[in-house]
Each structure stands twice: as C-alpha cells, then as structure tokens.
Length: 242
Image 1 (spheres, rainbow, N blue to C red):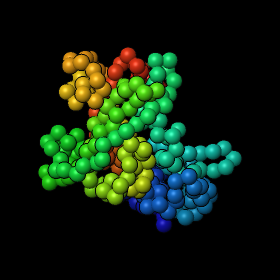
Image 2 (tube, one colour; image 1 turned 60 degrees about the vertical axis):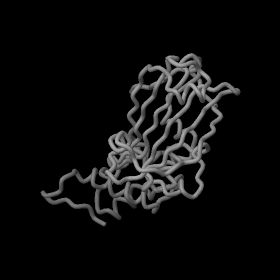
Image 3 (cartoon, rainbow, N blue to C red; image 1 turned 135 degrees about the vertical axis):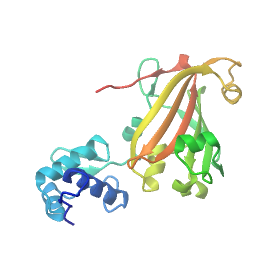
Image 4 (cartoon, one colour; image 1 turned 180 degrees about the vertical axis):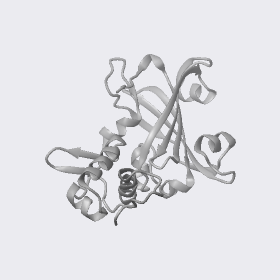
C-alpha cells in the first residue's frame, strides 16, 4: 500500500506512515507483545524508503506504541505490562519507591454524562458514561480514593463484567483496541470531599492532594477522566523530566 506523495498530501510521508502503522496496530493486525515486520519489509509493503520507516517507528516509539529491542526487532507495546501501566501514575512512597497498592472498586454504573463529564471527555449531549470508584491501601492503611469516568461507547466490556479494580486504564483500553497517547494531570491541594472523608476515615476539611487527570487515545479522543484524593503524608508525587 504505497503512501501518498503528491503535493496535496497534508502530512510528510513518515507521518502518514506512522498513522497507517498505528491503524494496523489498533486493528490488531499486529497484536500486543508481537513483533512488527522488519524495516526493509515495511519499506517494500508501503513503497517508501527504509529511512522513512525508521522515522515513522521513531514517532511510535516516542508515543510508546512500540518498543524496540536491540537485536530482536520492534514490538507492539503490551499495555497489560505493569512496567507500561506505571506510565500513568506518578505516586510513590515517601522514599520515592513504587507503591504496591491493594485496590477495591465499586461496580461500574452506566448513566447519562453530566455537564462536567461532557466537558472533560469531549462528549455529545446524549452521551453515556461508566462511573466507578477505587479505594487504594498499602499494608492495610487507606491512602487514596479515585473517582473514574469513561465513555460508555468506548468501553463495552465494562458492561460484561470487566473488573476495574484489577485493571488499569491502559489494560482496559488495550482490550477495546484503543491505543493510549498522552495524559494531562492537574495537581492541587483541596479540602477532602464528603465522600473521601467517609471512605478514608479522615476529618472534614482535611487537606488532600488532588490529582485530576484526563487520558487520551493516540488519535486525541479522551478515554478516561479520573480525580484522585490522596493523603499527602503517605506518599509523594514523582515526575520525570526529559
């Protein structure tokens, strides 16, 4: 399938190839954890140079859609992996170590999206969502409650019994054929909500670390809105800058 190369093309060839490869991965032509054809084979299939293939794969690697393994090839990222899942959390112990949390969750409930949900998730007026809450603890000590909202149209498996306590957003999205792109997280300090006070057993007005996050698919669609209220004395927020 040669790539468009005329003057009317709106993107450089390597970006068109990146889009074509991402579409094939979303369609599960190449499944998570499996190897892509080598660069020479991809160049022949798409009618481009090996250099163009390499630039397209560079983009996908930066977006973490693929992983290159020296001497072995290029593989589709498996978002079931805990190493990949950690991409979407920056919470660590006060010593900066990853948190091995125990998680419980309420069953997902489907409902019409409210105004805030429509705004944050870019939904139409008649859209529906799934809502659920997660409560996280370490060694029996509660430290975080999360309110999670996802578009119902994108996550039909939640209606079939998928357990949100056992699966992070990357895993849930992968099962629906969604490739995750960027996430934006807002950090603030606010008094605990009434629900958090009840679930975490903290007094009304207790200052909480609030993490308000929207995760988007690779094509830009919002796929999750999560608001987490955390006890700041029991964790720290770690962000790597490159």
